[in-house]
View 1 (cartoon, rainbow, N blue to C red):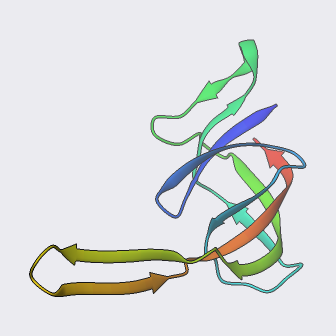
View 2 (view 1 turned 180 degrees about the horizontal axis):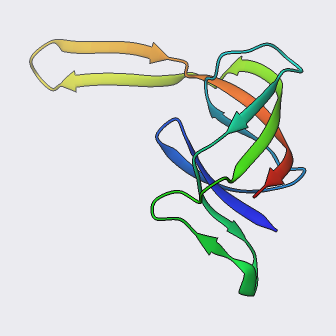
Amino acid sequence: MYAVIRTGGKQYRVKQGDTFNVERLPGEMGEKITFGEVLALGEGETLKIGAPLVAGATVTASIVAQGRAAKVLVFKFKRRKNYQRKKGHRQYFTRIRIEALHG
């Protein structure tokens, strides 16, 4: 069985035991998080699709780690104009593990 959840402006297809990164969420390692924005839940003939959300469905996850992604370099350059700008960015993320699907 799988679910489609929405968090951080993105949608993720998840099943029990999955571990992946999402946009930063508040909380410490080991804390439980409940996602209420479930867009679809089930599998095959039992798939329930929400309009836009599945009523009463939730997904429970635990925080595995808080971290920062690899650095992304932004480099601006205009030829022959002596213009160069270099800037780096590291995005914060939360690694979560899906514990249970309810609904």
